[in-house]
Length: 125
Image (tube, rainbow, N blue to C red):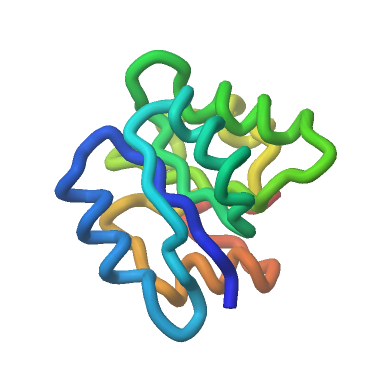
């Protein structure tokens, strides 16, 4: 079972995705509502996976991913957004993340596919 941190600035999505993903494959260890609190939560919770919204108040998901990638102990990062992967272009392609899953395609299968090395949502690192 993989521990998961959900980072999104909209509480209804945090609740929805926590309920959706918490189960046999994932244990939702915590949630965060912005980039700074996400970094703090990673330090405290040491999740295996961070589901990270790109558009956050303060530092965005790309910056959080960059900061996490610079750490010795770093979780797998999956970016998400209501926008399509093509909207982020080269920035998404070059991000130090496992992949991208659009919010409307969010599922245990989508996250599991990325962890198992398959492209989802038009991005594979």
